[in-house]
Amino acid sequence: MNWITNYVRPKIGSLFNRREVPENLWTKCDECGSMLFHRELAENLQVCSKCGHHMAITPRARFEALFDGGAFNTVPVEQPTTDPLHFRDQKKYPDRLRAAQRKTGEAEAMLVAEGEMGGVPIVAAGQDFSFMGGSMGMYVGNAILAAATRAVELKRPLILFSAAGGARMQEGILSLMQMPRTTVAVEMLREAGLPYIVVLTHPTTGGVTASYAMLGDVQIAEPNALICFAGPRVIEQTIREKLPEGFQRAEYLLDHGMLDRVTDRRALKDELTVVLRMLTHMPAQVRGDLPAPAATSEAATEGASATHPPATAES
Ligand SMILES: [Zn+2]
Image (tube, rainbow, N blue to C red; front, side, top):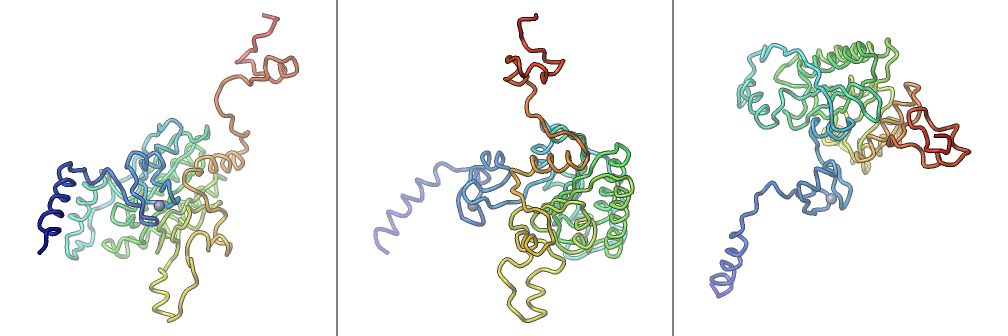
């Protein structure tokens, strides 16, 4: 041992340990390794400000950014029978559920809400990957059905944000039955002539991509999102061939005609608003509610609305 290990290192160590930084204040970007301050990251919708890498975001945080003024009402979802198969792996299924509820503060892996986005009344459903991998069980099926029913009732478009590892194995065949069930829910929207838009986020895999996540009238994905039925590793092992670069990623799927758009999360609200306004025959969004600045000139007075009379000589 020399003086570096005996003296210098403990001294440096004590300097850094003295001010104990709470661990959750900084998040490391998985892509570029930048340290990002939690508040800045939340303001940026969990997108790395250095490289644009999209990290996971909870449906609640997403809805707060998506709905005008962050205001939305949650739509109640019917609670299914818990643990009908009495499933047990390393842990009992109800214990896993309770642990996920404690961790996320949410009832289940999908949140349904209604409100206005860019002035368009909508219903939105968001899948929570942090809740047991966003897995599709009976609750998620109920949530999609509740969202579609509510949308039809209010004659509003439905926007669904998918993020899932697939079906919930703890519910066995009952989780797989949600595939036809959710397809029927999407069909209800189609029959009512209401737009159904899917935003695929990282990762959307398994049975979810074999049902409601691929049935949108418009299919949008977030950058670099993995979207597949069977994952690249499984395919590689099965066919024993090297897969092309970026295989099953959003941009690759866009190039191959599986998606309509790949959109940055920070631009998503504006883009969804434009698409919805076009599909529901609404005029383009007007930003702000001040009268147009040209209203003072004579040429523009005819265009000024009655609610904001321009200050002209007539008054
Ligand atoms: Zn980054």
